[in-house]
View 1 (tube, rainbow, N blue to C red):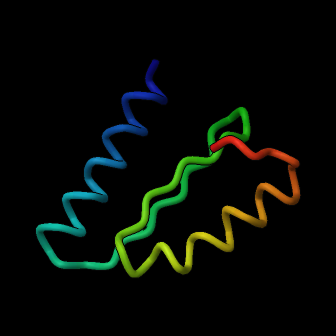
View 2: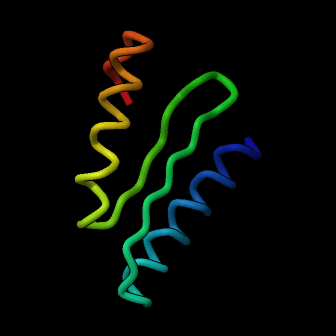
Length: 64
């Protein structure tokens, strides 16, 4: 319960920071279970995508 609330709060803050400050923001969160959650503003998506692909290749996971 606490993880989900904090995760959602972090994702919301990252989005607000990117919009309000016109900043490039990338956020990558790994849960205790090894689940990956990510947020990237427009320009950072190009940088985050290879990391997500590498995680899928290393763990065999294809659902994020």
